[in-house]
Length: 212
Image (cartoon, rainbow, N blue to C red; front, side):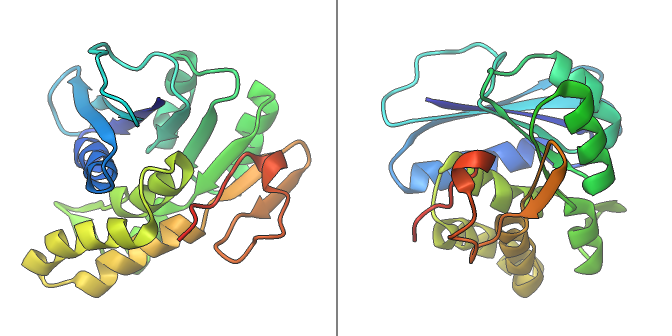
């Protein structure tokens, strides 16, 4: 079983994000589970959302306390999110630039994956109620890191959503950039993990591309 915990702020689309990941897994016959946990139900309040993906039926009904992948949608939540628990080999994916990733890698003595999902969304003009749609780039990154589904399946899901809003090209671009734009910070290094980086030392970074 692969477990994901997402920490976001109300309005960032954390719940939609985990539902999309689950939908992608379900489309390729995985057993999936996705659900949120709300504190104060207001815009800007911390939100947790969870995904489980497995080849077998999932009987667990608890929150995800030790995820294989921890996704942090806002830099304001980094300390809280990491303190909430993670498996020893679990990966952390930040919506951030290299500076924050490097500081956290040093502070917590562990590898940090990062993606500037906010920058991608703003560049493509993807906003909802005045907030960048960071969940679209993060969808690409999360499905790649979790192995939930191939990229073409994920793009099919967002096409359905984007088709109703008339911006299919921007949605697809955001997901592709998220899939291809993951970067990793270890002790003293930062290197991109892109679709074409098949010779990169992926065993060191822990990022495994999903085969087409």
